[in-house]
Amino acid sequence: MRRIFGIIFSYTVLAFGACVITATLLGHLPALLEGAKTSWILCRAFIFFFRILPSVLASAFLLAFAIDFGKDAQKALMRFSRVIMSNFKHVLIVAVCLVAIMTVTNEILSPMIARRKDYLERAPHLLSEYIKNGQEALGENNYTLAHRYGTQAVKIDPKNILARELIDKSEAVLKAIKKAPKTPVETANQLLPYLEARGETVTSLIRKAEEAAAHNKWFDSHYYAQLAISSGSGMDSNLKEAKRLASVAWNNLMGAPKLEKDRDQLLFEKKRKAYKALSEGDNVESYYQFMEIAAEDESWSSDPDVTQYLEIAKKRVQSQCFFIDETDRLQTFENYMDVYFTIRHDSGVTDVIYIRGITPVSDGGRMVQYLRGFNMTTFGKNGSFVRSVSVPYVKLLSVTVDNFDEETRENLGLKQEYKYVPYLMLDSIDRTMRGKRSGPVWEYAPYIAKENQKNENSLVLSMPFEDFNTACDLYGGPDKMRLDALVKMSSSAQNLGYSGEVFNSMMIRRLTYPLIMLIVLVILASVAWNLRTKKDQVFKFVWIFALPFCTLIIDIFIELILTVTGLSTFAFAAYARNSALLVAFVIYSVVLVVVSLHFVFKKTA
Image (cartoon, rainbow, N blue to C red; front, side, top):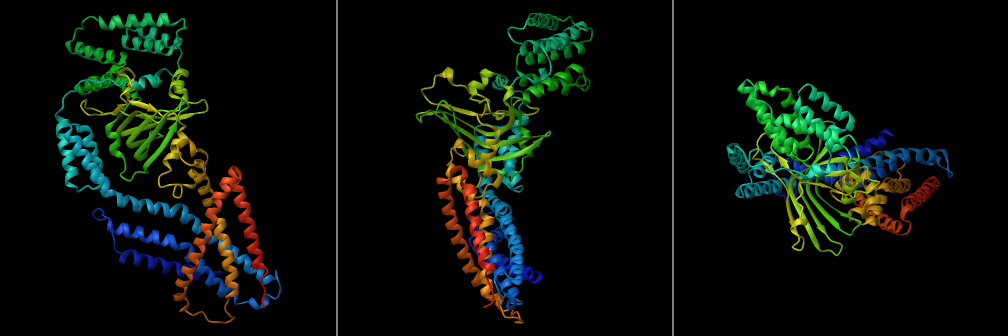
């Protein structure tokens, strides 16, 4: 066994060396960033090596067992002899090990290296795209978007002069902006209720409002009374008391007597103005005002009201949009690129979605995803254009369907069986500066009335969140996506606008690959028995040089087998449908038994 693995390992190392030399000497290098040439050549070498690895291992397997069988072949005088059964045991052990290596290479290593090579080739294009888009945004006075594109360009190539100039120019303008007119973001408020009222009842909120009023804490009293009003139903008998408490607290806030200290009076006025914006639903303006109060005076930043309501305003803002600097921490090597799929609604309307790049990020124990270049086009049931939206960057969260009331779920097309759905924040703001803002661009068909043109700042995709993750895994096609994702996709392909038969046949092909390669190796073991060396014959190193021709022949044989079995999977998928995988495994298992019997029937002539 040691000699068998030694021969296989030696030839594999020689084959890898040949691939490295070939990849180095071969011309036709694509346009690459400075310093990426060596990495790209190594990726190409590994791709060459992984492509021929099955035939390399199989030919070394053939040579190794041809030598190994010769040492005691004369003892195999009958079928099922002890010698032939012992040899078959060794064949299975080595074959299973080699098949495991082939499968790991095919399913994990090869896609990983291919993605790295693809990124190296796309990096110059991404860099020029970021710079071009950034310069266009700069020309349109969209300094926020220009700064964002410049930041991503610098991550790809830190030494790029144009990317640095883009950041410098946009930062110079943004720092000069003092205050921009407020533009409230309202859509998310209509979709997601405030989380502060969770775990509370109308009665408990009214009790907190009464306790705050008793201590002359009018901000808290009005806040809890408003929460009671917003979380209660129209039939709740306590709403009248909540409205009374809110009115009393508001009157005390608006008509508060002037305090003795001018500094305290100024703080109170600023707090009242910021809280007024919060109570009116203008959470972004309230957030900025409380931020300005905390930044204006160190003692004000520790004021209990400022601390409490700044945190509340910040949480509300984060439920409807995201901060621009969140995208600065994204890696340049996106997990998924060029993702596209469709969502078909029961009404016949279809949403076609395309995303240039997706990067998942862990945020406070939960996983959020940042989408670059999000585009969605909606078509009517007759195929006519309805509306479209494009956004440079989107933040996607997984939210539970319980966040929406029954009417909202019906309007959004969220089915009863959905547990979590993708919630997209289309609007982004700066954490400290009012002037930096980026949002969606909506376009509607001419026949859509103005009052029906909703320029929303958030979207809920009417699909399970699991289906969205599956669509992301489609990057690279069904032959390169993760195997577990392919298994899921085979059942949901049609829901995302893909052919179910294609994905089902590819799933069968990839799941049965180890069994097919095991059959090939057992067949080659029979060939090795027929080509076995004589006893005491000395191994000649020159045999190694004959192996490449053997490898070429075996490679053609393996490709022929995979082509025939690949065509068979389409037949299985078409006729057996849901039982196609089981039928394929049964047929290939029978073939494995047949070729195994053919081997153990061997004996010395």
